[in-house]
Figure 1 (tube, one colour):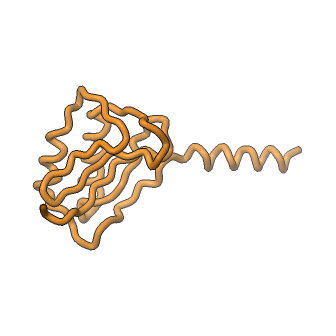
Figure 2 (cartoon, rainbow, N blue to C red):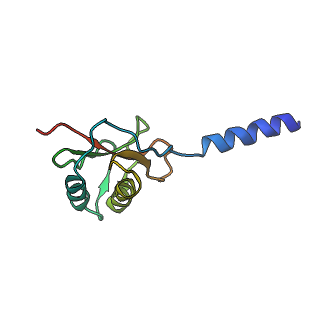
Length: 115
């Protein structure tokens, strides 16, 4: 009985941990200026779904659910999440969870080759 309870608690905890934030990405770093402009262009009052892209210059910025459905999220959440990446990740790239009841939902900032 106790062993089963421990397994159930372990599964509950691991299932509710959410997205694993990271500061990983390309070996190149995106322009902080381009990333700040991308953040400025996000409409805080709008709602965005899987694949919404906000890229500017060589700063790739996207909201994604990793195949977990649309999971609409407001622009303010995306802006705040993107800003957290810029503030916390030394090379201005990474992926952070959006904490919107979706364990795989996240914002990614990375380098992209100039067009």
